[in-house]
Image (cartoon, rainbow, N blue to C red; front, side, top):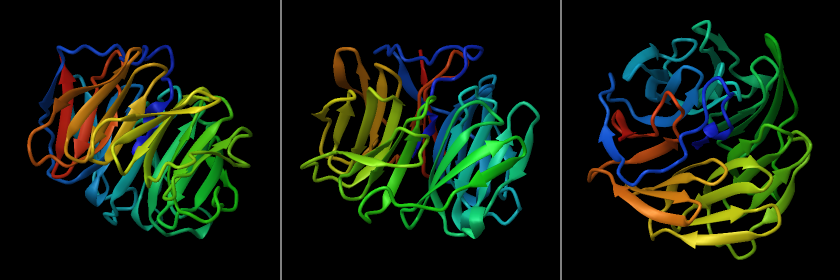
Length: 317
């Protein structure tokens, strides 16, 4: 989820390129975080990594240390944050969660703005994606009913369209947006959907015979898309056809990618990495770890995995 998610667009040149060159000598090390709350998503922004989770907690990693930026959510109600994503220049972090909670965090001004319950929607959000520069980004959020809400920010305001279900009625589970006008969504019936017009209309592009409840999608552009879910298989789309790679028997719960390199994490805590030569098993996290999300690194931030009970692992070299 993302999320999942998010995370997945290229951060602006001032941040440095994603640290996608995977080194087998790197080790996943448990980080010291100031919470034991479940952490459901992690994303990278201009000044570091951010993790979100139970009770509306927002953690920030800067200068090698994790700290609490927000507790209780934007309104103090304590609704959990389930998903996070950053704009392409990394200046704005969007967070979404239970009870219709939706907010942006301006990482430059250190300011939270509450956008909860767009169009009166108070169901829980399960995924959020953003693309574009801060202040003019386009947004997609997915609720627990599998509906997708499309928004466009114009400075201090966001204009929202009516919710849709891209497919034939199956619930959407995750969404990813690219820096141009493409978007990708997955559902619980092995469906993958593509939008080429800024998320207005959607067309199914697969996957015949997948037999998988998809959990997560990651996309850089229309020729570099990956999806994964219930049976340990990762599917990749090159703009024309799908290919599949079986990583194991456990469901893939977290996925992040750039153009050639990627990370995937199974429900059992096995970390897989992909480079130009294909997928390999990288490392097994500590026994009992329940991961939820993974983020690729930047020039300033290591790769990060987050999960239950305040779990955070950083890849260190």
